[in-house]
Length: 298
Image 1 (cartoon, one colour):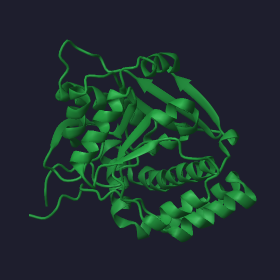
Image 2 (cartoon, helix red, strand yellow; image 1 turned 45 degrees about the vertical axis):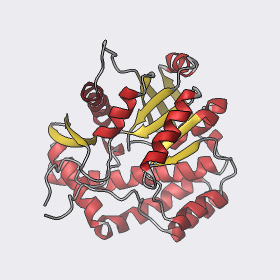
Image 3 (cartoon, helix red, strand yellow; image 1 turned 180 degrees about the vertical axis):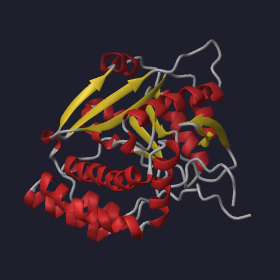
Image 4 (tube, helix red, strand yellow; image 1 turned 90 degrees about the vertical axis):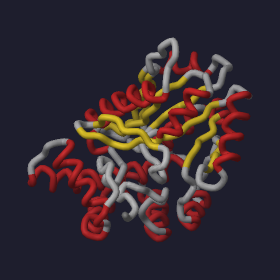
């Protein structure tokens, strides 16, 4: 039995040169010129990122039910939109957040929850660009703790940090080093009334996963994160930051329905349905580039 093709190592594609190229292009020529270069660079990734290309192809053919020619078009568009979000992230970190437009759904209610003093668990996904909202949390950002697989290549992180004009105003809790230490950091943060944020649609290893219906097929989700969210006994919010036309980002906040005794299974079911609506509305912004619906080992 080999490893599941769905298992992911936490690393994004791309290298130092690619990131540095776009950093200088944005700085010298602007964001829109970077998009023009991206239109040509995307072509490279279709044949030279075979696993990701295969995953996007299956997603468009099986989950979206598209035909062959439509799937070919969507394959290119999918990579292009992903590249746009990366460019946007670089631009925003470089002090160009004012070049974008921002819209909010349920923002007043979201602020009420943040101000409750109980601590909050925010569950996002690998869709859109969650970093787009980092600068708009203001003082709230200093209380945000993002739980993530900190496995990005160090030289890429160096490029992003070297060219960032705005200081990162949130804390990272790495999951892939010491899980016990990560749990303690989460508990301390919530006790202080801070916010824990994680993505609920990706896992490492199949030891603690749960199956849920998602876009017409069964998929595996990280059970442990939903167990944590329930055990913490604090408000839970689903959060998405989605790219829209004309350099606009829409921030979407949804509250799960809280029953008398919510369970990890119930929370996962609500999350999968919430995420399903988001992906249905923004199908090109599903950025889990592996066979997400393969629940079997090879």
